Amino acid sequence: MNNIVIGQYIPGSSFLYKMDPRSKILALILLMVTTFVLTDIIQILVLLSVLLVILKLGGIPIGRIVKGLRPIIVLLFFTFTFQVLFIKTGRIILDETLHYSFYTILLAVGVVLFWMITKRFIKFKISYFLMMIVGILSIFMYYPIGDPFAQGQLVIYTGGLQGAFFIMVRLIIIVTLSTILTLTTKPTDLTLGLEQLLKPLSIIKVSAEEIALIISIALRYIPTLLDEANKIMLAQASRGVDFKEGKLKDKVVQIISLLVPMFIISFKRSDELANAMEARNFVPGNRRTRLHILTWQTIDTITIIITAITIPVAILLRVMLG
Amino acid sequence: MAIKFTEVSYQYSSPDGSLFDALKNINLDIAKTGEFIALIGETGSGKSTLVQHMNALMKPSSGQVEIYGIKINHSKSKKQKLTPLRQKVGLVFQFPEYQLFEETVMRDIMFGPRNFNISKEEAKQRARKAIIQVGLDESYLERSPFNLSGGEKKRVSIAGILAMEPDILVLDEPTSGLDPKGRDALIDLFTLIHNTYHKTIIIITHDMNIVHQVASRVLVMREGELVFDGTSEALFNNESLNKWNLEEPDLIKMTKQLEQRYSISMRPFPKNIDQLFHHIKDVI
Image (tube, rainbow over all chains, first blue to last red; front, top):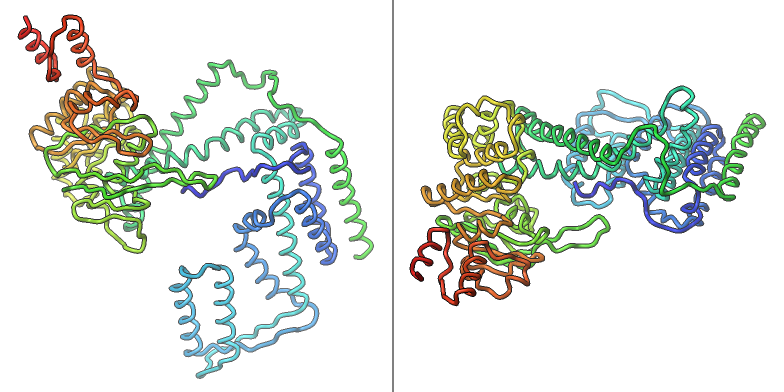
């Protein structure tokens, strides 16, 4: 429960930190569009290397970016597999027959069981998972023991590999871009920037200020509520609830015993917060001065111009090559 | 010994990765019956962390806690069944909001006993008994726990633990946020339980008057260390009292003033108003 970090901001002083949050958000959107316009693998690799240079100059440790990629590893794995299996263009680079017999399936099940038992002792979980997959495939491909009752074909084309690689790089770029934003911008600055950017929406009666307020209050209260949840779990554990065990029916009661106090405490807290805000004469939509004023600098203008130019360049490249 | 702490330390890791010592090298024995212990100390001194070790909600970072013969230490590999300990050592948290969740007070009080496989009928019996014990009447059993006043919620949460019939009752600041009448009623209740069933009771409190009136043994925590373990008389005669930011109880303050003004001796310090009157009578 304690290892959840909300707001990944790490303090620093590079140019990425000095930039206005507004220009950072805009640049993020513009670069994302560029990423989607590009279709050539070389071009997208160029974009990735430019991104790596920015990371280096901005003094952001690569380790933090890799950490940011961790949640999407499953997604990356699935897109990769689907691309490899279903794109059938280019040369064939692998064409193997898979033998499904009683013995090979038994062996495969054995490998899976071995993986499930040993995985908790292995540090590199993802590589270990991939090794397990490769192991199973090679059993089906190279050890045709017993009578196969079915046979399958595993065909991999160069196009499939290329496509899979391309999509992976694209996803990695997008996640890296947003990680850069959240790493170098304080949550408060982020919501402030968002508020300013959404201001034009007031024409269609959407209050940017209220949206920003809701976001910042939500961000502020996530750690508090996690803390409360932890306390409730301890209080219920004192009354004999074992949150780790129990049948499905017990589980339902356990979750209710956590959720009901959670709801009541959150409502109470929001009520108190509303009172505290009113006591300080907060009126939604009123004109307010700010403690921190966003300043647009030359670097922000330059960033926006450069990132904006990448879009027509990408379209041009696509038209010329395509 | 029911609970035995041997060189127990506990460290929190703060978000930036640094370690914070919540408990430092605690050695402590708590008897199965007959003790009335007050645990005092400043906010953040580790009192709540200490009591959460008493029913195995927390495991020590180093050292060992032994609760009813079950040894609890840092090793993770051993799969111990810890829930039975929580029936033996009942812990009431400071805020009743953290535990009340059922539709009626009756069902909420029954929740604890039911978790320890007590039959429905027996649990109902216990709920009826517990609600009376905490000084509310049976009409409360059918009410919703959320429509009660702060003091009533507190009593219901205590009843919820009492119904588990623990050997040792641990209460984290049971009197905070109560009016003087409610506070006195609760203290009377704890004294009653202590006297009738000889259960060991441990209360965390900031109220020195309570410590003086009821506690047979006082533990003082300071910055994660157990700096004092002894009788309340010994505590209030201790010279470090000021250093620990503790106040003398009103009765002792008053007695000392009387002693000073009329240069008389009124030792041992009176425990209650009656004893003070006796002292005064003797002098006159």
